[in-house]
Length: 147
Image (cartoon, rainbow, N blue to C red):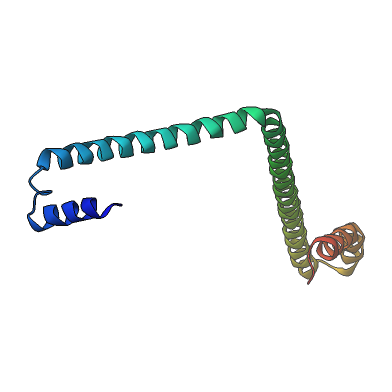
C-alpha cells in the first residue's frame, strides 16, 4: 500500500469515520448472511445428490447384499424354529413316557395289594402276568429317566 492510503485509513480510524458509514456494514452483513445460507443449502444439496448417485451406481451390489442378508436371516429363523420344535417334541415324549411310568407304578401298587390278599397259587399266576409290567417300568425308567 502506498503511504498516503495508510495515512488516510489511520485518519479515518482516529476520527471514527468508518463507523459512521453504517449502511455499508449492513450491506456487508446481509451479503454475508445470504451467502452463508446459500452455501449451507448447496453443501447439503450436493451431499445428498452425491449420496443418491453413489446408491444408484451401486444399486445392484446393494440389492445382492440385501438378498444375502435376507437369506441368512431366514436360515437362522428356520434353525431356531427347528431347535424349538425338537425340544418341544422331546418334552412331549418325556411327558408321555412319564405318564406310562406312573401308570405302571400304579399297576405295581395294585398288584402288591392283590398279592397280600390272596394265596400262593394266585401269587405265581399274577407274577407271570405282572412281570411284563415290571419289565416295561424298568425299561421306561432306564431309557427316559436316570434314577
